[in-house]
Length: 195
Image (cartoon, rainbow, N blue to C red; front, side, top):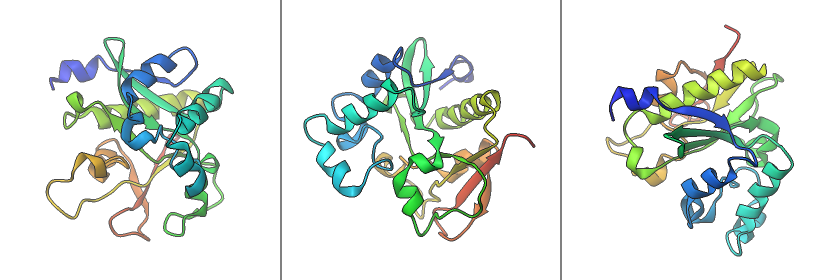
């Protein structure tokens, strides 16, 4: 992808107003297996049940209806081509219960647990641009610490279905630094917006 396309990307939080763009990006499969980006927000049982009859989709739609933070969309020519979940860490139940990615301090952090990028725009720097968009949004919203849990692949080529948590190299390129190495291949990374 040409740099000019990356320069034309815009970023905005998911709201009722742009829900249709989010829905179009996620498609009939809900991004992946009817996830609708609810995996980290729900218990294992509720998430599994939500994979049928639009349960997870409706759960995400309800978050948006209630004006709760859900994530950031990356748009190109008015169409959503990228997404990352972005909300206060405590909104992601699975993170709060994680032994590997447990809190390292009492700081108020916002987390990025997952990504989804339109297959036509993958491997072109969109994830780095999206992360920079999230950083800009966080600065404007007074969010001081952004945290994520990307993968460091153990093989040269990682299938797209395993890249949904984000690649460490993308976070590194966007200026994130490792904050915890409890997991060798899934470090906790942080970006401090006030530095």
